[in-house]
Image (cartoon, rainbow, N blue to C red; front, side, top):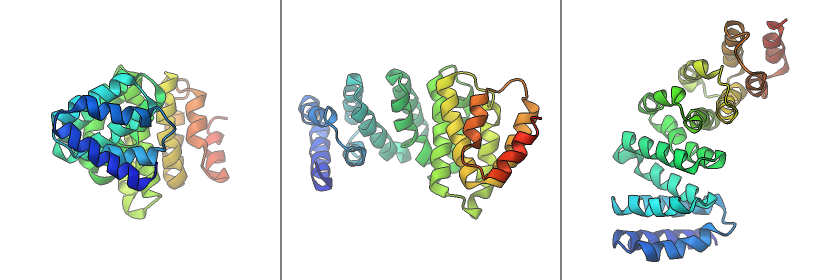
Amino acid sequence: MNTSEAKTMGNRLTSLVNQGQLTQAQAILDPVLRSRTRFALLDIIGVAVGSGRRPKVDTFLEKVASDKTEGGWVVIASALKQQYHLSPNDTFTRCCEYAIAANVWYATDILGERVPGPALVTDFDQAIALLDPWRSDPNPWLRRMAGVAVHFWAKRNRGSIQSLPDAEQLFGFLEPMFIERQVDALKGVGWGFKTLGRYYPDLAEHWLTRLVIQNRSHYRALMLRKALTYLPFENKMRIIGVLT
């Protein structure tokens, strides 16, 4: 499949879904999801589907989710991203529901990089408010997804000086999650710290030094290792120095 074919399929699926022909739409999509289709092409299909009429689109996405294919989560996530502007709160809620239903790390990361992550980039204040309860949610996949969203924001802003106040706010957002113990959640949170540190190393040094001192006996070594991954040697050594 190439880009043109993905666009054609997306438009065809949207037409079928809008007409309520969900079984036919699923029959067309299933072979694509069960083959090694590139995520970029699945994103194109998902965006097209997401532009269709609700609630028919929502019902179709539920059918896709029921098969729990890796590619299906890409289509679902891209469709949700397309719908974000219609209702941010509803989109985040459904993103949570899909992550919990999937119950696997790659679905969480796929959703995180397509729904809350892009929302942070384009709609920072609203998105961070919607993300706030995820930090302490009992479900580890939602806690993980909060970290993935921060990672995506940092990857897109790439150390922009104009984004420095938002980066500072995101370090504060992740602060209470530094002591995360559950490994799946920790890896997502650590990913957020790691990518922020890559593009804002001096800010990362300030925050991580503080967090290490305040939580000396509570954080897991894995969290600190991830957070230090991309820091320049000098920044890293100064943080490690407070441990001795």
